[in-house]
Image 1 (tube, rainbow, N blue to C red):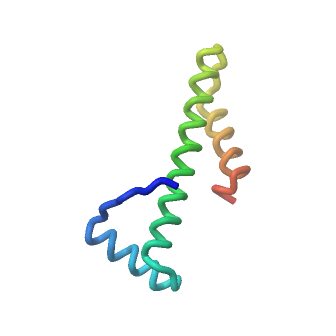
Image 2 (image 1 turned 90 degrees about the vertical axis):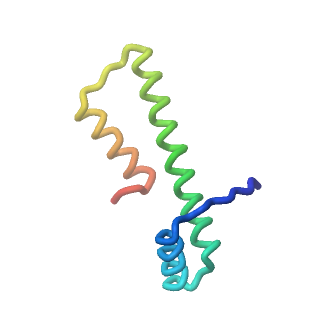
Length: 82
């Protein structure tokens, strides 16, 4: 497992602490969950950009509304929206 040190502003530290207190979790548990979700979101974003670049290189062109509909469907499939 990787070790990561993150420095938060005082405002972000206060927000983190208030969320932890409201959910009866430690600051570290809340921060870890938030970071895990962020990393997963970034990985999904990179996968989508890569797929788009590969499609463009293959000559597949989509209209903007088609791209929006595709991303909306992927978000629904992945549970990111309802």
